[in-house]
Length: 147
Image (cartoon, rainbow, N blue to C red):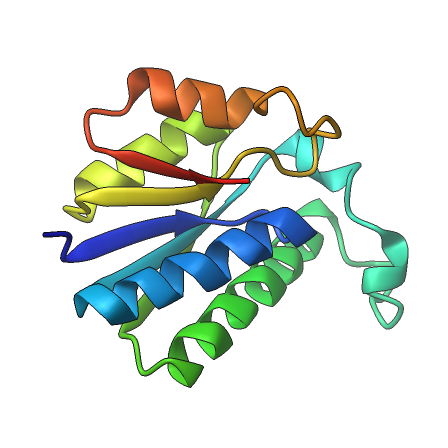
């Protein structure tokens, strides 16, 4: 069935639950996982400063974003390792996260995207987040939405 699953994460609580379920699905299907974190300028304003108390003042935006992405992706690697699932990770700087997710799925030859219904932008459990809606609308491969 599915052999290569793309799991986008923004580090939010719901996206990390989607990671857990995506990794469990990959284990059940004997599939491999690629996880992506997309960094954009708007992401900077949503990172909680307390997440990086040791971050030197002189570090700029790019260093902060790299650090944030690595923190998110390390959690995915840990979840995959715990389930004995092969996992690659990547982060991309892009102003349109949905497009970066779709591009990664195509470039990595993924056959399924597993993502949260909403991330840091979405506070409503009723309405899908804008990134998720755009991935659902524009993706040519199946998308499983975790809610």
